[in-house]
Image 1 (cartoon, rainbow, N blue to C red):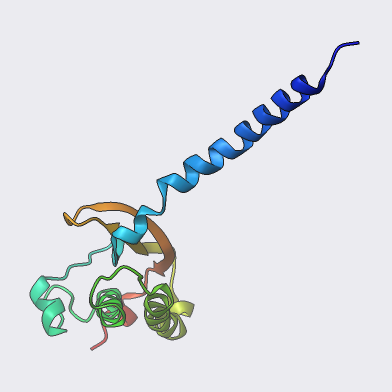
Image 2 (cartoon, one colour):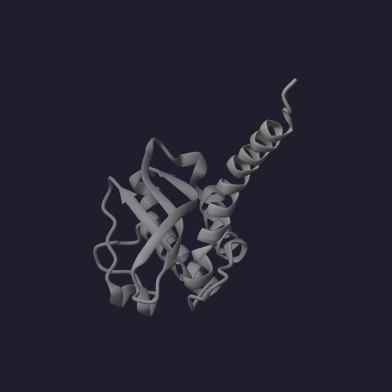
Length: 159
């Protein structure tokens, strides 16, 4: 009768190596996100005219092209709220503050104009990014998406 003990140990060792190696590889890669700054931005995809100059955003005013456009006003307010909620990039981020700030403005918009909207004409995404020390965005993920519909001209450009 042959001694099967060395074969059992060899299989056990092989099984442990197969189970532990992927775990070691995953943990050795570490979370490089800890070494990167967190920032947030808005991605705007609109099929209707939406224009804003950097001067408008800095001053909080509306450009002549916007002529009181509700979409322009709402998105400008959301940009300002995002900046106020998270003015300086750091290593932690603050998803709840950013989302709450933008959600509050979107909720106001929907309460006032949601019943008048037609098909979606603008999609705004709030994204969280990781930026390396060279200022290069290494990854981003969408935190939330807002949909804006077309408004009748009488509502879209109040007098």
